[in-house]
Length: 245
Image 1 (cartoon, rainbow, N blue to C red):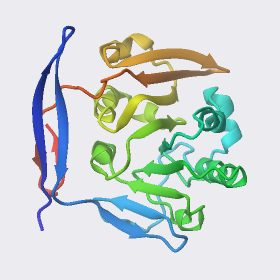
Image 2 (image 1 turned 45 degrees about the vertical axis):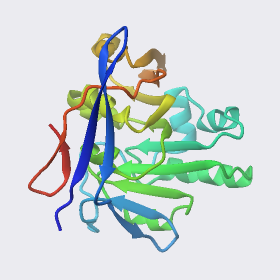
Image 3 (image 1 turned 180 degrees about the vertical axis):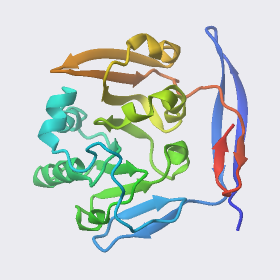
Image 4 (image 1 turned 90 degrees about the horizontal axis):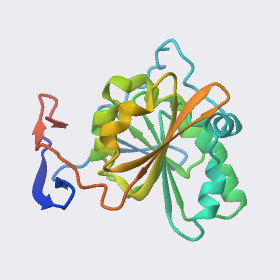
């Protein structure tokens, strides 16, 4: 059956810039695979159960304390500071899900139930079925992340994930505005990525750049109405998936 995702385009005029609101009507949803532990995997492509092939760098299981130190960002404190607000978090490039597992454990200990955790990866890891059931997963290519049925996201965190796609990162940040809440954060680290490369995004995001140890960290916060953005219509490719033109 052919998957079709229709898109309505509405022209919006502001005093600063003309933009387009993209709204998606999904006529066919992503597949959902239930894991034995109660977690779910949302995916358009078929799950490959073979052991992931190494890409020549460590992506597997960085612990929470190391990520907190490297990014200079405390996820647990961020959640606590939001109080009773529901908080939706994506770990972009989650690997085995070690960091999210630790976050879930602390949330259970604190009896915090207003948090939704998602791990995003273009590789499948069999250990997901042994992780905390509070974590759900999005298994797909990054171009398809915005087409999955997830709530509006408050925090996207990426520990040495996004820097691997720097040649596509501006377009990807433009895409991510569709799923972020106003005020939503993207926090990621990289090597040698100058702030001026993000200048085209500053109409939609406030951009903070700082250093922790030897790592350069960027924090992008979506401005109010930042989800208004230029977009072309969706085309269905030979794989029957929706692709941005």
